[in-house]
Amino acid sequence: MSVVEQYARAHVVTDADPDEDTAIPVVLRYDPEADPRSVRVGLPGTDEWTFSRTLLEQGLRAPVGTGEVRVWPCGRVGAVVEFHSARGVSVVQFESKTLLRFLRRTYLAAV
Image (cartoon, rainbow, N blue to C red):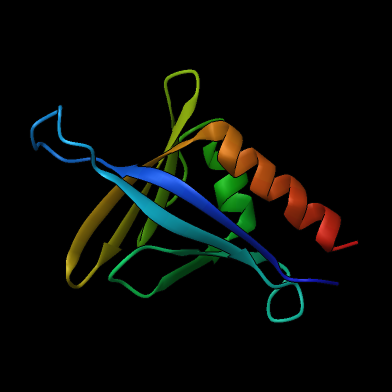
């Protein structure tokens, strides 16, 4: 089994000027030996967030999650991941195809 690491760009959802590019680099990571049921998302300037791979997968189809991580579809081609911590809330939008590609790779790595 091998570690899956995928670099992606996501957009921070804010009420800032819509013309301002809020794209950030994100690291998606899956380590089946450490925890075969979890994925990790690394945002710049924060720790990695670890949560259920199933939560990410289900969130591409319908709103899911309570507590620290919530995921829901956004339009036809997007998905939003919301992270809650003592420091506040981060809301990040991904292209669904990026997350689907990552999930596909995690299932292949777990074989």
